[in-house]
Image (cartoon, rainbow over all chains, first blue to last red):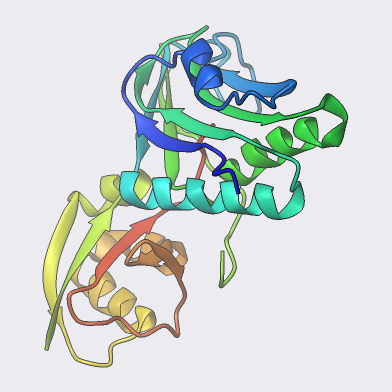
Length: 154
Length: 82
């Protein structure tokens, strides 16, 4: 049985989207769904300043990588046709227009769940992977609060 | 007594004023007991300690969970990666 590639990491380095995609592309791969999140410079969300100078990300790296692995396992449990999975979060000081996170899933065909799988991956990362960000603007600093409380077994 | 490590991240680190500490807790201590010990030691952070997320050895943990000897405990707010 083929061992499908699974990449999960916390990094301070620039995300190389092409390299990450290449690492989860197999000879049998015909579709990839790549999601990447970026720092938004113009925000204006509730209670936050309208202009972001930069975001400061931090992670509890060893637990974060273990939880990324768990998210990848959950994806494989739900979408058995997924071949490669990459889940990578960049940390440190990141400026607007910079990719901060990548979730990518590959499969033989586009219609076997890769879109849903990547969507699930980013949603779960935002629920259970211990990473935090602080928004820094000319008005000051605000920690961005998450909304999800994990339950036993997560 | 068991020696354990407690790490603090994000708002918890700001409130406690430390990245991490080692401390001795009685054997058979649970997460709830550790929260009480830390709230006494850091009264300014007591409210935050009351609602913090907790992990033991890199898995989410809850008030009734026992803290094993040598554990790496972490306290942090709800996550906001992405």
